[in-house]
Length: 152
Image (tube, rainbow, N blue to C red; front, side, top):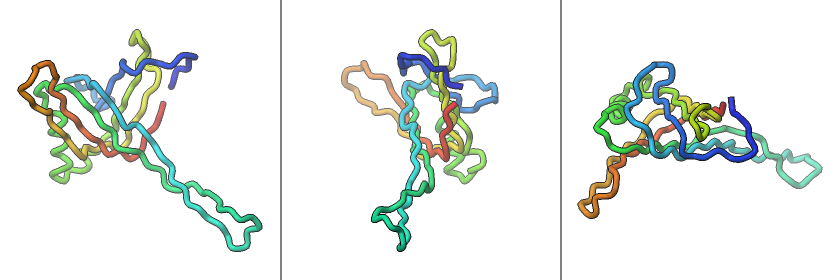
């Protein structure tokens, strides 16, 4: 359940639960979650005998956008193994529900959560490796196809 307050929450305290209810350990935190969005398409309709000269907009199919997760490379194979399940045709194992939880600044409460239903990896991108500098963190990226998003 979302917790309302007058001032907006900060975006830097969040958790991503890749296997809700499984009690599995967290192998790495994510540094970024992007693409949380939902859309309702509309169909335009006008009957030939309508007295007004404009179309009616009727709600159509709703869809969720792709969600991108980014994290530092730590040697964990769980994201790549998840992608591999989809690549080898194990769709029932590849699709799962994911929960993204925004926390209060003191991390005492989950203030808003988003449930990504039917999430399945569709793209994994490894880190960009460069020999200059040495101050950058190696980041891997996973893009998820999501069937629907529910805000709680």
